Image (cartoon, rainbow, N blue to C red; front, side, top):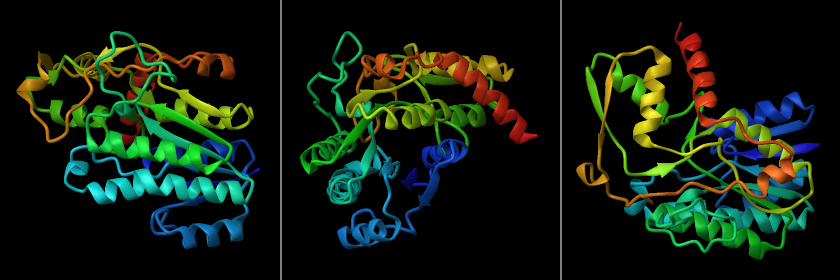
Length: 284
């Protein structure tokens, strides 16, 4: 199988490259410098040279607060580019795997969001990602849209590393306790991406690690597993205002993902434990 990966230099892109490579695929990992995914001519030229069978779009504008002021960039990368990739996938008969987000929802639901629930983003980042989903569906390509949340893993900027860095040398930290969601570990997600891409059962999916927590609960588990003694104190979102609003409860229901995959993702606690062990190994 010939697999083209966009955003291959990012945290998820590198993990996806590793996953497909170990499965014997011929992988073409393209970073931003290798391909401008907002340039249709550049995309077409790349597809003509590579003729991929599967395209995994890990490229995205992920600065949630920055998107509020850099709207045009956010909508170009998150909104327009997926449409262009989808159209090119259809032209070259390639399937597309696209990574979307829990932030397409408004966070007011009392239960985890189903894939059929109506999106209602409350910030520019979420709106741009929703536009990307719509563009892929309208492109007519065979697609897997996988909505994820709270990504963490080796080789990127994320919550777990931030907490570990802030906790060192501090007696206490305040962390928001009124936003709920599910952490997602990049090696587990990469496995699911590779597994789903081989099913031919196209459509929209939700994937996170199993279980729901708050940022406060997430941080407490990180500190507990790292052996640090920093006290994690709860606070409200209102105490730490940000330029972009966040959904208060954006947990994702994993049906039908688990049925199609035939397995349930590891718990987020197990995923954090696995990462912490790798993190300390790399620190050493």
